[in-house]
Length: 377
Image 1: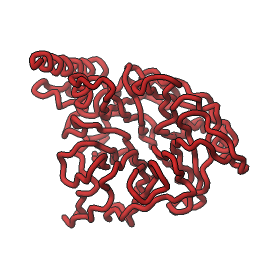
Image 2: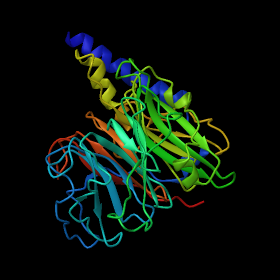
Image 3: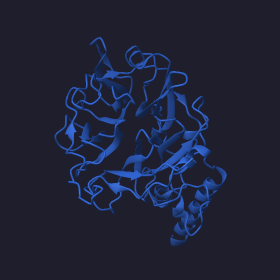
Image 4: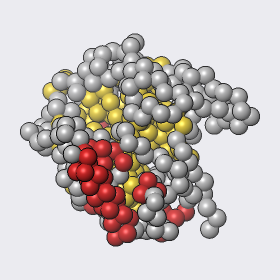
């Protein structure tokens, strides 16, 4: 048995090296430094060394973050006490980028339901919040009650004031053209192509009756203004993004670098990284962990994403990574690392992890942050 486990680990290291060798990044990924070692949001310090209060993460599961364009609001999913039931959407705020995060508060019963509400995503303009929900019925923009399209649907909420985290309006379920009878729509990620005015919504879809590991990444488009897209049922049928869904494993939550749309970070359970190695040597076939992987593209005019590679591959040491490969401190761990969210400038990465080895661990899933810098042109 020990020999088999060692062989499996060596084989996966070899697979990871092949991924790095044969699926290189495009030049767009070389604009930045390596990601820093992640820090638990309960273990942050200010630039002068003052420790921040450990108020963000709880003993419950805190995951699926999304960050506002100004970096002052972090909305996330949590099943902590004090919500409407199941998982709810919560938000933590800070006064400036140099201040500590404040104690989170629930978005309230207008947005949240007694069912699971999860995977939020803010639009760049800050006026719309996409999320997924298991609620069985909802209201249309005209106030008409309608049943869900399936086991999990995409919803969107609007607010007039993009800085008022208490001002969200009643959510509207997106049309059943994009929502399907399967349990899908988890982890919506929005992006607008300024050159064409086209809106893109990336999301995860699992066909009805399919295994839990068969989540893939799809994209829907709309060419109207965003309010019309969201309220008039104009989002198109989701189209499979082949390269991002190229594994027979779970490919889920995505984060796109919105400033230029050329980089995508995703959660995936495909082999070739740390958590997937643990999965392969596990005897629990129904258990799947994920790590963060990254893909790039040359332009926003197509879906020609490069094959994803682990966000850092120096875990292959003592086997060196190629010079182009994403190395630096280990962002991924041997635990579940998922649900990435990128800041507007692409320099800050938020995600959740089930790791327990870093200061600030509170329990369940915690939120973490990693940073990088822009390299000179």
